[in-house]
Image (tube, rainbow, N blue to C red; front, side, top):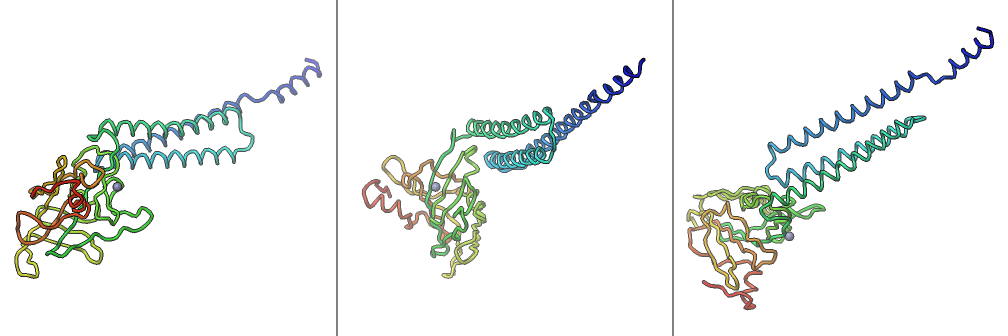
Length: 292
Ligand SMILES: [Zn+2]
C-alpha cells in the first residue's frame, strides 16, 4: 500500500459516517416509542379500571372522555416540547414525533366518537334527552326550597340530573338506565337523601332533615309522602306514590305534560291540595283538565 493509498484509506474511514451512530439513534427512537406505548397502555388500564366502580355508564364514559382528552393533550404537548429541545433532529425522529402526535389526536377522537355511539346504542332513551319535572317540598306544611345554585354551571346536582334554582328536575343527557334518574338519585345528586322514611337535603338556609315518626309543631307524628300530578292526553290526574324513591320522571320537556311532584312531610293523607305553578296555570288556562 502506497502512502497515497494509505492516506486515502484513513481519510475515507474518517469520512464514512459511522454506521453505529445511525443505529444508536434509531435504537433511541425505538426505545422512545416503547416508552410512549407503555405509558399509553398504563393509561388505558387506569381508564378501564373506572368501569368497575362507576355508578352509571354515562358518567363513566364522560369521566373517561375527559381523561382521554387530557392525557392526549398533555402527551402532544410533551412531544412538541421534546421535538423543540432536540437539536438537529433526524428524519426518523421527526417522522416518529409526527406519527405519535397524529396517533394521539386520532386515538382521542376515535375514543370520543366510539364511546358516544356506544352510549347511545346502550341507552334506554336511544340518545340524549331533555326531560323536566317540577317539584315542591313541604316540611310540616311549610314550603322549603333547595339551596341556591352557585358558580358558573349555576346548578346543583350532576351534569345529567340537576336543578337550577327553579324547582325543576332537569334530566339532560343520555339516559342509559332509567334507574339512575329516580327521585332517590336526584336527592343524592343534590347532596341529600331520599328513602322510604327519610328525606334530607341542604335547603336555602338550613339542612332539612325529615324522618318518619318525628312530630310537627302541631304535635302530630309526620310521614314523608309523595304526590304526583301526571298527564295523560289532555287530562291531569293526581296519585299518591307508594314507592316514590324509585319514581323516574315522565319523558317530557315541557311541564305539563311533564310531571309535577309534591313531597310532603306531615300527617298521613290521601291527596294534596298543593300543586306546581305551571301545572296550575295550564289547568286554569284550560289547556288540561284536572280530574279530581
Ligand atoms: Zn333543563
